[in-house]
Image (tube, rainbow, N blue to C red; front, side, top):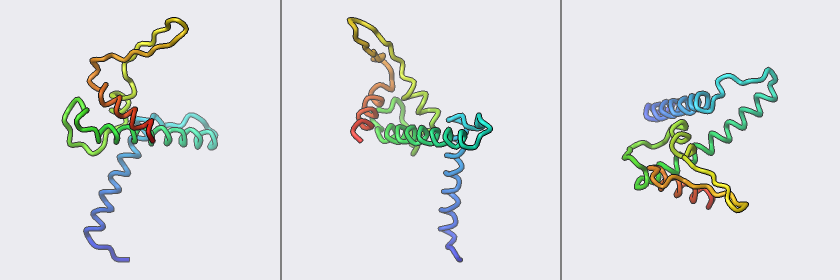
Length: 126
């Protein structure tokens, strides 16, 4: 079957993107070595890692789309999972117990706070 050179180049670029995602899944989700000798257990852990991967990918793409709320200017089209985890998942909070209530306080000077709030609202409205 014959393909045009432009189509071959497009397929090659898609292959590179696929390799990047595979690398992120292995390194950032820490599934380079699966812990069990049982295939079924490893299959379940890999599926859980893939769900977490897709959720983090969605959060990263949502954050990238909020150009005005990012604390820095970027031309990136996607955000690595490690950066999503560092910037938007590990938000510094303080849990306060008072009058039988738990209150979560977020540091109001966090440069990612505006982006975090909008991503949170976007994810809740799905």
